[in-house]
Image (cartoon, rainbow, N blue to C red; front, side):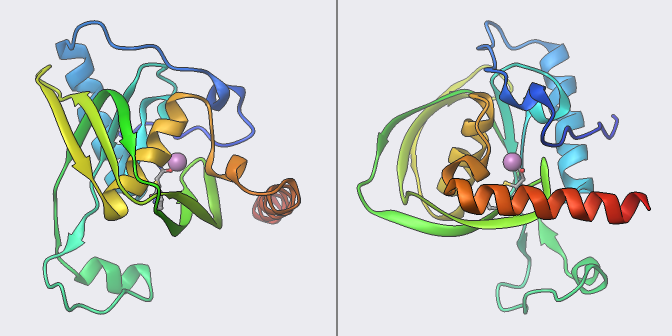
Length: 188
Ligand code: GNR
Ligand code: NI
């Protein structure tokens, strides 16, 4: 197991269209284990293979709900560490959206490849999708809530799309300028 480097914008690899997995192998399962370790470490709730430089249609999601559903939102990393999260790892290989609802939901999205930037993104609130799991078993299910939002965010990565592409050019450029400024400040 290993924590992998996460590629950040404007790296051109984030714009690559990933290829379908023909047959799920032990090498894929090893990659998936590393992707989970990388995602938990970041921390994030989803990760697409291309974010660690692998152009295959593989993504992992774990919404990591707190064990106590009434727990307050952590205000800091310190507080977050005290909360026990129930792990619910999900693997999606070759995911395809076969239906999307007309009703949309708005979520303030972030992305490990666009660090520390957030934007409100509209997406279909519910989707039906097909995919393979890490054993190569086919699934077909309707998803909603944050899982539906996250799956769509991750599936965008498989097609070289970032959440900032859904914002107006004005908002996107503003965000990217802020990111550049932040990086320069950190480098100094
Ligand atoms: O950690 C993440 N949080 C998140 C919040 C709202 C919508 C999507 C996401 S995915 C993101 C991790 C990431 O960049 N995955 O590609
Ligand atoms: Ni992302």
